[in-house]
Image (cartoon, rainbow, N blue to C red; front, side):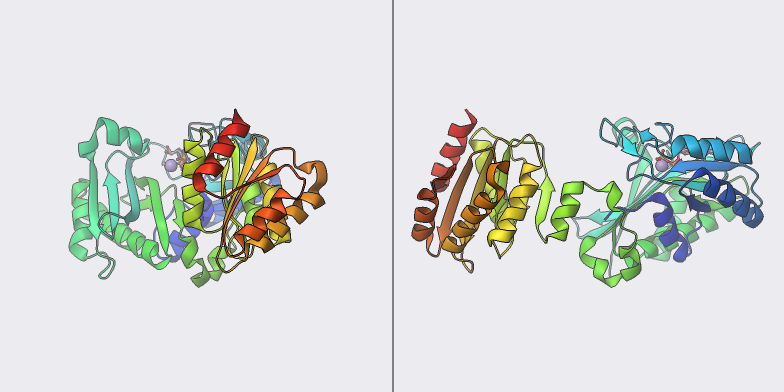
Length: 397
Ligand code: GDP
Ligand code: MN
């Protein structure tokens, strides 16, 4: 689950990581109130208005603006809220901005060169350890740094059993070229950051930039946080941070029906039970010259209601030219599933405009095939994997 910058910063702050402080606002009036409150709390005169969307590169797209007085806070918040923000990380049409973070300006006027660093914490799957990746080249696209100046990116592997050790935190501060008070601040910062990552069960923290102010404070100016969905049950308070407006609407709907659905770009919809079979079916579709339009695991209970929900989800996608149903009847009987398909089809009437190829294998597969074949509907049955692929190929050509 991805979080907004302001939510990520809340988590960081709760573990003692210094952050650029801010207050989220839904409209220009709230933005002005937030700015006043921040001035009272921090003494800041200027504010940064930051679009809150689940994508980075907002600065480049015009989603991060500096306001030098309350009028500017109001007008900039009005401009940014409601805009379709286009960044290198959004879809081409952009993402609608629903809220902004009003943040204290931490780039002090007269501070000719504030230092910006890059820092992320992530899981290194190859070693089974966590990894801190960091660089002196903050504020820029880390992919570009990796391509052009890879020697400026450092990594530190952390054993999850021990957590970050003091010498490792000092190494990070040293490699970033720090000394004196800033060195000590960085040691504190990176230690707290790693602890926050581990304790929040995150799978990614990306802080770009980490800022060193001219008075040697180290703080997170940005925060991209991805929480591990499988550990969310341990964090009821984080669960509430989900912003469904940022997610794919079909995927949100699928989740509510208990279906495992991932939207893809292809032309063949698939309905499968079990993730492994779903992956194999996607390969099959590719071999037949098609492209999967989705990944869909209907799980163990493929009754008429579920099948109908699954059909509806798949058919929301206008690119779908055919549907391949590939279900193994182990616990669920094939004839039940076949009946479900026939009932769902009849229920949906002319909503289904594309051919359906059904492969049911396992318990009562023969009865299932007969049910499908005698239904009189635009549904074709297949027994073998290859046969299913050929039938998909035929309807696509
Ligand atoms: P991103 O573009 O989505 O990565 O958003 P960031 O939160 O990283 O902000 C983009 C850029 O805005 C940063 O790299 C900074 O250069 C700038 N910025 C952020 N906070 C401040 C601030 O307090 N004052 C000023 N002057 N610039 C800021
Ligand atoms: Mn950033």
